[in-house]
Image (cartoon, rainbow, N blue to C red; front, side, top):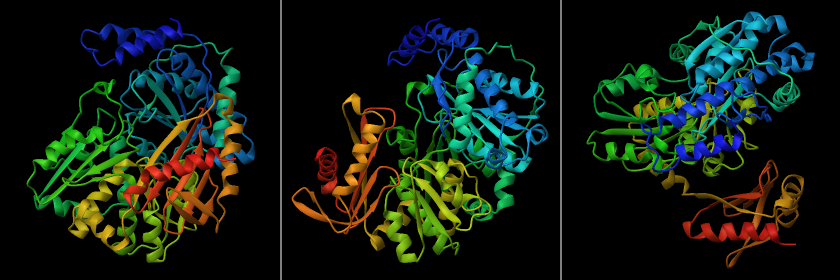
Length: 539
């Protein structure tokens, strides 16, 4: 079936008036195309993996090509590349094995079988976890001593996408020295690969939830006894919305299925009920309804994305995104847990934690956008240990945890914070605002001419640095702000002496400029955006 036909079918499936019962035949057409198509696709394998439309790009045949490309990566790896992969040679891949699983999307198991088929042909041991959350892959790699993992998920992308992520032996996201080779191999092999039907894969079935909890207990990552005591007191309501994703059932298993737990959107639904499956404010409505009606002393609600690597909270009074929770969690680790270390954050993330860290005498490690950049601070042998590593797009990990972002860690840590401090998250956050002041982060963007895509756009954004060096003044609305610090890790971030800031980042693939701003007073939100936009267009 032609690619444009599949795309049109998906548009019908995702239309507001789609009925999953009467429209079931459309879904079957997509699945049939994904199974039977032998059309090539162009693979672009970044640190978040390769994502493609199910039925046109993402097909059994094309996933088998990617599986073959990864096996070839190991067969042809140089000694330097084996260092990044975390094993010594191809024989070690065969004995240590591959962990593979999927989220809740269409044909997850079948896609896994296509990839695993290539590893089986090469004599590699396979561990299959079925429906798995992203952090469970990292925990399984470490606990089983596996060589790598393949995670079939496009994270929070809409239902017509699927994706494949690859992690080496440390369980963290693969770096470009690995993913660039997978991309090259996949595209070289795409035209000549002959598909072989894969079924009855001789894999070993594992229990990813048990492995994950055993990992947390072994590492001492979470204080489970404190959480259990709070739950046993019976004064808490816990609400988890899974949006039909792979975290469903996880909180119940991790907490011993407490009566205080309310589970939302647990049904099998690879179309996510027609919503964008992300931890957004809009998607928190169900959690709000339950908690707003609750009369318990402690209240916590959260929403996960489909693969369990992003989370957002609500406590009955306050919505807490990762800009706030990451700062709160770091403050807790230093002041209540008495841990010492650094905090790692992406350049687009709120500077609220910077102010807290400065007062607590701790160092902030600011990185380019992408969770892979936290690896030096999350690794087991890290010289500068991150107590918390987080990004504004609702991803978090921390001390003695996985190198992947981990929504389940965020959820459990939130419960621990409540149990230890005796405060709901909103109360704790309000106390921090009183001590350190408030920040108001926003993000937006604008389109530019298509001719600027790629290197020209990057160059134009980077040129802004010359207009905003430390000590210079930048017009923001009716006032001029003095530049305190300039960061060029990922785009251009201008930090002013009043602790407000703006970040201008180019899109690498689209004619768009993304702007992140943060200010101390909400009235400055719009003028900060306009000032950033003016800097971009100013000659």
